[in-house]
Image (tube, rainbow, N blue to C red; front, side, top):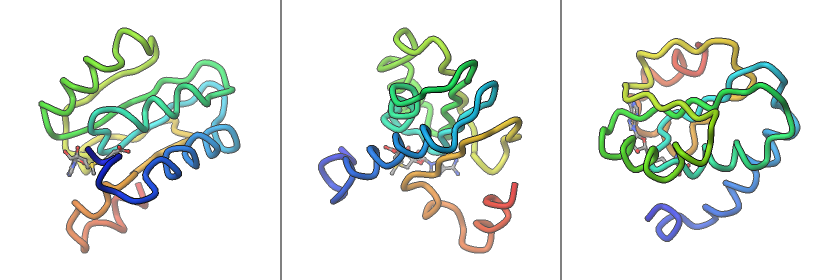
Length: 117
Ligand SMILES: C[S@@+](CC[C@H](N)C(=O)[O-])C[C@H]1O[C@@H](n2cnc3c(N)ncnc32)[C@H](O)[C@@H]1O
């Protein structure tokens, strides 16, 4: 649905694929915050040229997490899903943290502290 409703969505996903190639590091985690159905997680996976990475997809909607798992859990062996508010998760050993079209759902006064974590 986002693909149809957001102009330039496909270009955004392609840019994320480019960024994982440039900024991803071996032996690190890639976080997809507000993962929805997992399109960004997939881009992180298929464009990844690094080794030993976990892709951690986080969303606070149980339905979105279910769809993400149905879409990719069996296809991406290194995908982990977490159903949680992104403000409550602990980001560890990350080389990539993506908030694609998600930051606007966080209260303005809380955005900077989320970015700082
Ligand atoms: C527009 S969609 C994101 C699209 C997705 N990142 C992509 O690249 O296709 C926003 C998602 O953020 C999730 N979301 C909103 N507020 C959240 C929060 N506080 N914690 C976790 N997920 C949240 C929504 O459930 C929704 O799935």
